[in-house]
Amino acid sequence: SIEIRWKAKGYSLTDEQKAELITQAAIKQQNRKAEQHAQQIKVADAIQQLLTIAPAANSEHPYLKEKHARPGDLRIVPQNADDLPNDSIIKIGQNWQEVKVLRDENPNSIVLTAGDLLLSAQDIHGQIWSVQTIQASGAKLFAAGSRKENNFHIVGNNDQGLEAAISTAPVIVIAEGYATADTLSQALDYPVIAAFDSGNLPKVAQDLHEKYPHKPIIIAGDDDHHLESTLGKNPGKEKALEAASFVDGVAVFPVFAPNEQISKKLNDFNDLANKSSLGIEAVKRQVGSVVEKVSQQVKQDSLLKLQVPIEPK
Image (cartoon, rainbow, N blue to C red; front, top):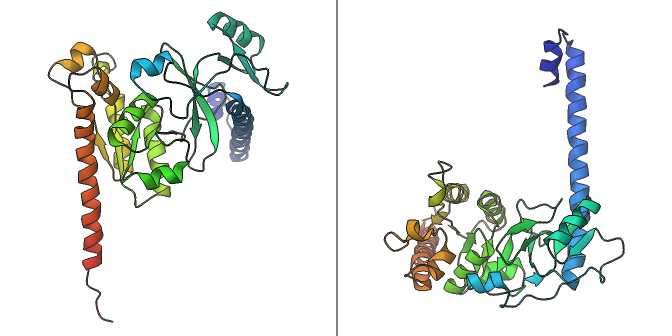
C-alpha cells in the first residue's frame, strides 16, 4: 500500500494524510470502474451492430460438425465490415496474419476473423454485452474490452428470450460451453444455459436463482480429471459444485465407460455423447434421472406446503 511504501522510505503519516491517501485511492478506483463501464457499453453497442449484419451460422461450420452441435441462433463473422458504420470499432481480417496486422494498427478496436462463429453473451435482462468467437479449430475468444462475467447464452431456444426458455423447461440446466449445452438441450429437448466457462458458473447460477427463485437449478459440470495431475485441482468440478451450493441446486457430471475418461481424454457431456461408447442415450439417462429426481422433490415440497395446518388464532 502507499502507507507501507512511505514507511519504507522513512516517512511517517499523520491520520489526516492517511485519510487523504485512502480517499485518493478510492477516487482513482471509482474512476477506473467508470471508464471500464463506459468502454463496456461502447463495445456492447458495436457488437449489437455487428450481430444485425452477421449471417446465420449453418451446421457445416467445422466446429459444429466436429461437436455434432446445432447452429441454433449462432451467427458468423462476415467477410468484411463494409455494412458497419464508418466509425465502428470492429475490424475484420481474413486470416490470422491479417488479424495480427489489424490489431497492431488498431489497438483500441475489436478485431475479428471472418468465418468464425459468433456466440452472443447476454445478462438476465436480455442485454447483450459481449460475443464469444469460436474458430474452426475450436479456439475461443471474447471481444476485447467486453464484459463476460454474469453473462450467458441460451441454447436450443430459437432466439425466443429468457422468459420463454425458463417457462419451457422443468428445471434450469446450466453448462459451461456451447457444444456441451447443445448436447444437453438435444438430450433433454428443452433450452439449456451456456455460462461459457467454469469460473462464470456460480455468477450465472446466482443471477438466475435470484430472478427465478422457485425454479430448481442443475449444474451440468465438466469433469476436468486430466488437470488434477498437472494443476492439482479440478476447476470444472469445483466450480460446478460451488455454483450448485450457492443456489441450493444439484451438480451432475458425466460418467464414462470404464477406462474411457483417461484413455480418450474425455471430460464433458458433449464428449459422453460423441466420443464415448455410451453415446447420447447416456446423457439422457444420467442428466434426465437427476432432472426427474429434482422435479419430484419440488412437487413433494409443494404438496407438503399445502398440507401444513393453519393454527387457529
